[in-house]
Image (tube, rainbow, N blue to C red; front, side, top):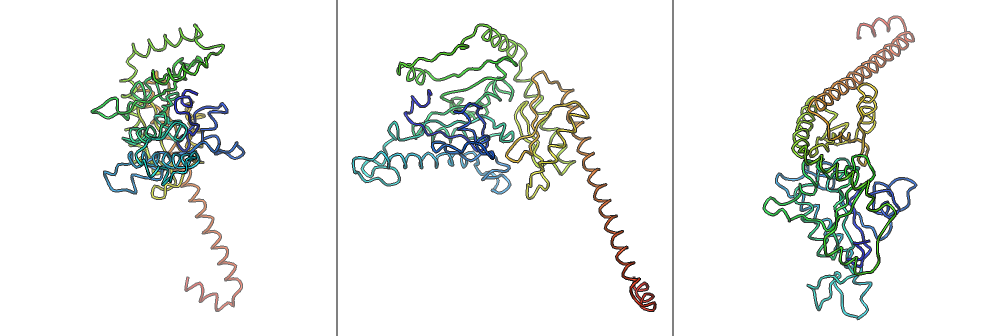
Length: 395
């Protein structure tokens, strides 16, 4: 609502495979939901930007020269959508008869879009969870935010899953900030929730003063029965105290490095692991049948998750467009010993899977040999005696 009031537009832009909630309004901008069979179709006012996945997306590290700026490339893909939206809306709103070329008046080709002829908002998880634990390429948000704001839009960071220190920074969008300018990536609106109450249902939306004022100026007040509940606020404050006192940031950084390094070591031992990625305690191991083609090993990923639950009593899950990414998002109280136990369990289960496949292939080979022998015996029994001797000699 704040974004619509600020921009006077209704065009929303999420990333492919994004998930922002289960209300009707948030499902409308969650491809993770509306792309499912039987789900309501994507609304016309929602335009989906490519998922900035450098392993499996439209721009891949493996396909491009070393040093390619994938962050800018994906960010510019957001800019292309912005330009298309502005062009369309300007042509619709053009009632003066002036000549419009590529959405811009030929009399004023530098004119910024007016309110109502641009983008409402760009929604982006600061690290993409349901899309497969995707880490945004460096410079992506800076480039995307620049294009969105030039088109009159508001930039919204969804920190519901990745905020409050899980990734080694208080807010995951901070991983995108320019080292020379910490304000190079600063959202206009930040949504936060889940870890805020450590299990207790509490959430918040933080906005800039400009956006807050634009909403206030409408005269449309906002309230709800449970807003500002003192018990929930006390719980959230207690959680914040613990996070600060326990230095959760360095803890997440340390364990995250262990999970990444351990995953890379497993990757050298097991061909099934195609990619290891993450920040802090937000890690993904992508399973593939073949590293060259990157064919998703979805069923094997699901089997691993099921097996580690029944064998080691560890709870993991799979996600991503193909359901082949094993998500590692442990509680923040996870320890170094817990990480080592998890990595060892994964190693043993991957070995178990590989051994099972070898046995299966060996059985298939034995069956094929037996079938060939049977066919040969049948063939020999149908030829004359002299020919049998000659045939056997030739074998």
